[in-house]
View 1 (cartoon, rainbow, N blue to C red):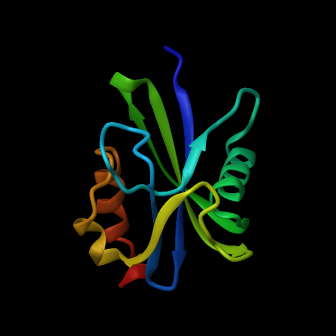
View 2: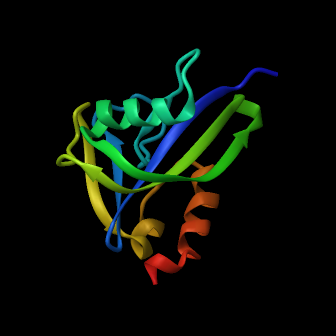
Length: 130
């Protein structure tokens, strides 16, 4: 079974997380998300992550680490989540997205795609947010 690979950056600044939402409803649901996108053919995850976050929010990643991978079987996608803790440039929305910096404890007040519930739960357990 061939999966579509998607890289996602969880951008962390002090005790806040950057989230985005499309202005125009590209999808049926109106959901918040962490920035990222599809891995192109013959592209590795690291390069794809750097490219996607440059395109979407205008940043050059300096420090990151792999966080989790979630397989979404019925949609045939693999979501690769990375923690981004250092970057160069000012973060902004290049692709017409709404965005917010929010406290981790406030994630529960925003609607995210269902696979993100596992990621949010794991983030809540991380010590650097305490």
